[in-house]
Image (tube, rainbow, N blue to C red; front, side, top):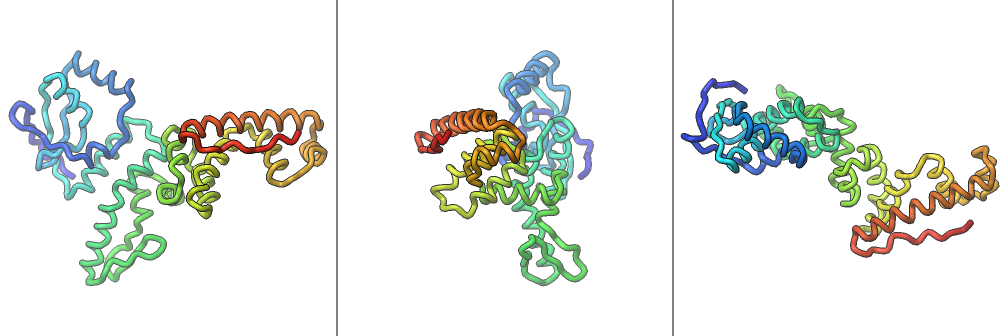
Amino acid sequence: MKNTGIICSSTEHTPVVLPEMAELLPPLSEEQLGALETDLLKNGCYTSIIVNEDLVVIDGHNRKSLCDKHGLPYQMLVFAFDDLLEAKQWALDTQKGRRNLDKWELGKIALKLKPEIEARAKANMSAGGQAYRPSEEGSATLPNLPPVDTRKELADSVGLGERTMGKVMQIDEHAPAAVKEALDKKELSINQGYQITKQVEDLPEEQREQAAAVQRALLAMEDTDREIFLRYYYYYQKISQIAAAMDMKESTVKSRLSRGREKLKASLLAEEAHEGGTALWHTTSTT
């Protein structure tokens, strides 16, 4: 990557917007976009839009869009990149310093880079006179060429650990839509999403969403309520056994079990409404 020092104006040149660049990062919130728009209207576009030598926008898509909306002029600063992958990684590194992106968001960005990282691995293989044959771990090696480990490359591209990136890849490939939606809404951590995914991935397709909904509801419970619920419904312990094991009164166990059941019911009914009527709540009261 190199700053060429070339500056051009939107009044003389029209930049190119590629969807894969514009959609690389999560969209700004309404509040963030509103603040940016207010600043542009008050002070103009004082920060250059970064473009490559083909005038493809690399950084500054939101500023460009708002400037176009209000007819505001802006300058473009030309950077030279080896390829679009390098441009994407530069844009990501730049934006990470401006935005508070969580690990799930970073992992999803990394997955968008996967085709190009794999293409680079294939090119390395071809350069060594062999076909691209990644191992099950996502890596491949050649004499005189560095190993190409897809998962490691993806993790490094966004600053995640390899294990975390591996969990993101598993969730992306196997998780029910409800789990991904919960991660997008920051209702689950990557570890929680991964645990649910592993627990439901061997179930028939038609049962996965329901099982995932139950797991999400359990995770939303308080730790003590969840333990009581699991001991009673999953391990078939009696109220007296739970009370003895958890050093509490039987009346307290019954009360917390009832509370946990109501919370689970409310969560599943809300999920049912969201899913358009699929019956999710069927736990029988046994107090």
